[in-house]
Amino acid sequence: MNHDARVLVVLRNLTTATRLLDVMPIFADDHRVERTFTIVPGSAFEDGTLDVLHALDARHIAWDDVPRTDVRLALAAGSNGPLDAIAAPLLVVPHGAGFNKLLPTGHRDLDRDRDRDRAERTTHTHPVSGLSRAQLMRGERVVATRIGLSHERQRTRLATHCPPALAHAEVIGDPCLDRLAASASWRDRYRRALGVRPDQRLIVVSSTWEPTALDGAWPDLPNRLLAELPYDEYRVAIVLHPNQWSRHGAYGIGERLGAARHGGLLTIPPHEGWRAALVAADLLIGDHGSVALYAAAIGVPVAFGAYDARLIAPDSPMAELADTADHLTPHRGLRDQIDKAVRPAAAQLSVARGTFGLVGESLTHLRRVAYDLMGLSLPTTRMATHAVPVPVPTTSPVHAFRVRTELTEDAVRITRHPAAVEDPFEPADSPLTGRHLAVDENDPDTGRVDGASVLFTRDPAAGPHWIDTTVLRPTGPRLAAQIVDARTCRIGLRDGTRLRSTAAADPTAGDPLDPAVHASAVYALLVARRPLTGTVHVTCGTTTATLSIEPA
Image (cartoon, rainbow, N blue to C red; front, side, top):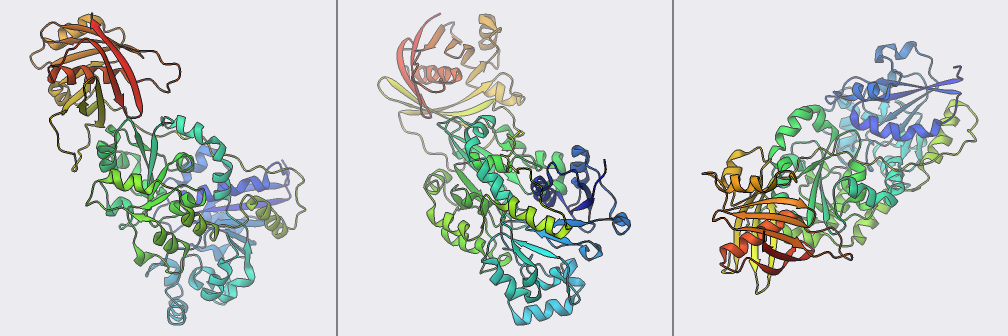
């Protein structure tokens, strides 16, 4: 197929790949434009970037071949790397949400121009990543033909840090935010894909990649959340920066999150999924990475689990957001802190509005700038900003629960937490409360299976024989239960008692009570020496059901 212009899409790592793929719709349906990708060398987190191109089956060339390739326009996300080697006009789009991080000492691009960097430190504050002379200029020349800004306010900061670049600046908005905004109507769809019921809260944990990021500063936060937040009322997901995936690999990430995954943690993959999780979230627990600002921009409340002010420019949107948000502490129980943080966040939304401009219009402005640089007329085809894909998290079923029961005269309240993680702030018991371990027979931890007070199976074909053999094992539980269907559970005790528990049908109710909860309710009655047959009201999370228990 013939073409009039080749666009070179310059990737550096997984993050830049995501950013630039969001820009590609500006060339949609235009047969005059050929897209070719390359990977600029120099990033410590390049691993996995080529895999993205292979998955897309996208045409790509080696960086060394760039000087010999006829290119009409180059696109990059951020100014890092030897981009001055590109002879074609260069359009740089933002790498993240605004310009927040201070440029670290020893940055490779700084090493190329130490005198200029030293002058910047003397004249102004510490250089800001994305605005620094050392990144934007080579000698006396501004490298990029156009420098994309997400908001008009950023012109002032650019003028402070790199005055020669101001003439190259163009406010283009943020394609990433536009896709988040376009995805709002899919929120329920994303929540269903993540296994979050309407009556549950989704807490998303996000970590950037430095040692003082959330993953490094509070590594057991996912375990703490899963251990302290009731399983039937909350779900927890984690979004790790793509650099973390490049550094550790999928296997390494899985090993680091082993207990949390067995506790029901939803691990969002690095290429796509974090934005869908953000749209679905009720709270974002973040750090000084860009995800916190994107959350604030779409109205998701933000709390900080870590924040390293030493890395952040004091006049940046991130510093302003950190001043408005709650900062969680590991020294107290988390549930009260979480419930306090899940509230309307008008101040946070106000910060975001000063970070992102031209909301919903980014692709239109990017198309105009790109085609002007290529010297081509604008296409007449319509562009659409698409919703992000439905997420596909990595997770494991929860097979074992620490169960807390509270009895009243005719009711039982059940609170379940994954047994794979421990709660350092577990509340003390009272005379009317009890605890036990309830385990699915499929739990691979056979020590928990042998130590269970309640053992249950979700196999409808198991039949009464399974109950008989289970309670008679030397290491068998006091109570065994077979889940028959969504409302019915068979239950057996060591003394030969056999029961059948049925939840009353309620067409107005939402999701039915997990039948495994029937067994825990009967166990609570057994330990309290209450009658085991009759009617009992059982509440678990926000679900209440009336159980009829009769001899089987």
